[in-house]
Length: 460
Figure 1 (spheres, helix red, strand yellow):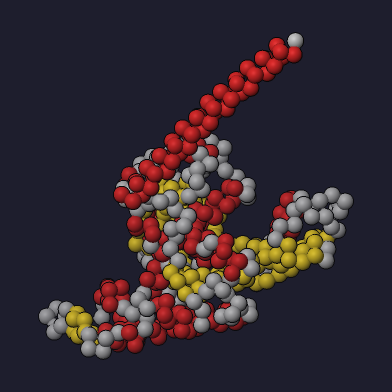
Figure 2: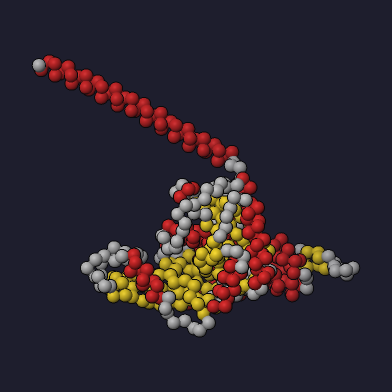
């Protein structure tokens, strides 16, 4: 896919602690090239929900301005927006349609109709359907079909995972985006966005749980045999840990956050019993000594609570440690806590690792974007490309040419340059050999023609 043929997709992650705006475009290798990047502190969002619209708009404007500063050629009109919060719920449904023309193969429009029908599913008053995700299809009596287009049958149906949210919470997000001068292209559940950024096809087949530990919430998505089995929003995140430290140790919020990042550990047993942090006293009061072990005990208690929720949701869908061969992928800003992998493995009995959104990024992106905290925002861009490639939504036919700014790229290492030189030299060598082969083939053909002519003359 060349640059002129690919749209620029913008992800807007409205989080509890930060708002990030990233503009990206896929290059000819199918990797994301970052064309703009901006972030701002978030003040109007609590536990993933937009509560103060004016403060949220200011933060969105600041993130957008920083994005424009990184690349003045950008024009941002439509955005893919992440949604989370403890108002998010999910339910499983099953639906089918009897086909009007069973003689012909199943068409794509019939599947679209089947999905559209599920949007009429009864849900509690005050809620709204955010997304309808087919899990697996069946045609007549044949179950477990990934894509039924091209099959033949009288009846086609599917099991569905339906995600719902509070109508007012959704309105607040849309209002904040609209009043920021933008249009919401689509609302995407944050754990699904994060999953697309850090997960591969192999992970999906093996069975994997994605835990995105954000500022206000921790979001869970569980995949098994290539199918989304469960989504959940756990109402605790990094902010809760910071507040626990603030209350438990009697320090300021900024001090609690700094201690968590610099000295925090998710395992109290790994913290040194004789290590202390000195906090300056307020307005002439004496300095305070904080035990590193006490700090770790507070962090572990809250992380245990989050991981107990994960274990509960896995049990709900019957996926224990033997079923999920891919284990748990930890992502989001909170995943960078020391010893969190060990605690996760201990509580859940599953292998764990940190999920970085590097796999889908072009190789020369800046270090900042490698952090797990940007997985959701980059996943929103990938969701946009999925819509574009499957023609799920309308996109303009002509796409503006925007160059990747130098501020968002890093100089290639000596090893990368050497490798590129080797590849270039190899390709030149191949071309030279090809030209030599062409020359010898021509020479051989001429010789054969010459002998043919002589044979003809002898026969005559």
